[in-house]
Image (tube, rainbow over all chains, first blue to last red; front, side, top):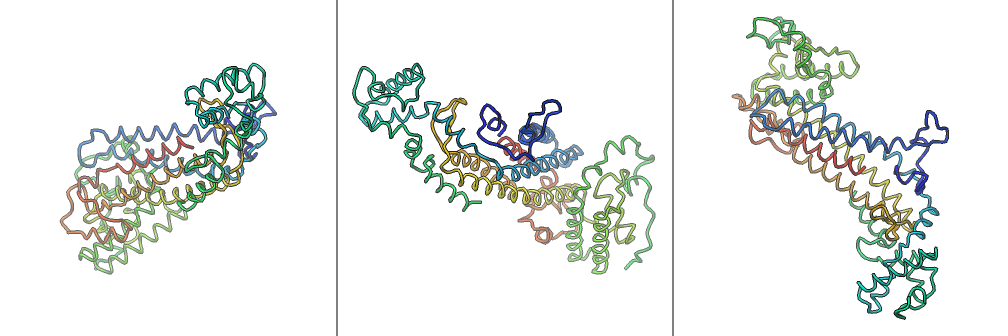
Length: 202
Length: 261
């Protein structure tokens, strides 16, 4: 959340009431709550180590040492409860910046694996396909284009003619996502099924 | 039955636990060893445990029915005093157990002194902590359920939202935000299962182990377990008073959960 709400990512917007300002920089919207949750991990890890150390080498049975079990345990309970309370308040109010996410996906040659998988379906061994796609990405970087903006000739390169015009459907983001259509995959209908299974388990 | 107003005077220092000593506890030691500042949050469990213990003592003829009624009423009154902020916690009484027992004796007299028959603070506190952690886990599991539902809702409304999936924080392959959120769902679901699993192992009754060896009153530990909602009783009296595995398991589960959050 901290990373995604930064200006550099800008994937999500956190609700204002869970953020704070800066004492000097008027423009700041700091994600203090997710940061604190991140920071609180340290104290709970510390409590775990404290208890493990406390119990090591105690002779049976009760020793006064055991009185030291309470504060770490109680604080671990309270910290986890508070962090859950914060997330229960924040999660339903997270705004996804869908355009920014889409743009970031288009820019990252994220369908390169799909191009390789296309070549595999055309009987190119995967290792060779990996190499060919690497060359296509290199060309696209040089031309400042996305893979889907290259011509069929550019995609094929000098050595072969395996790629045809049906490649452009494969190189769409929707096509890429829809192709991962199996249990645990990212295809939207699989995600919906996963959500339905998950709800039954809550 | 004894007259509830007649009572032998208590020593001023540390309740009545200093019969074998010739001097009072050092003031620093009193503060250094006291736990009342933080164990007072166990008062509900301590009182519930005492009521269950007393109920059992009546069935094995250690207490009369009238004495049991006095003790139960006294403990209920103390709970009301605590919850309305009227009970003054005393450091010289060390801990929550002695504070409540001392107040009980103030309220109902000598009958109150019989409550601790066949019991030690060792098995008493082990019982209190287990009860407290059990109800805490129940609350946390409920909260985790709410968070999981919120994640599933957000994932559902973003099942078609395209984003880059990352490896090495470099754009890797297209995924949906819904898919990404469901990855968090899986982590938090496992965290929840770990707490439920911890609850299973902690839900055994230590009371009846007394100091470490058991007690000669042949306590009906099964009855106490049933009254307090335990699934069974700790099998070994030494282990019953010494075991803190459940606290470690809980902290391990909490630490991993915080790692995920």
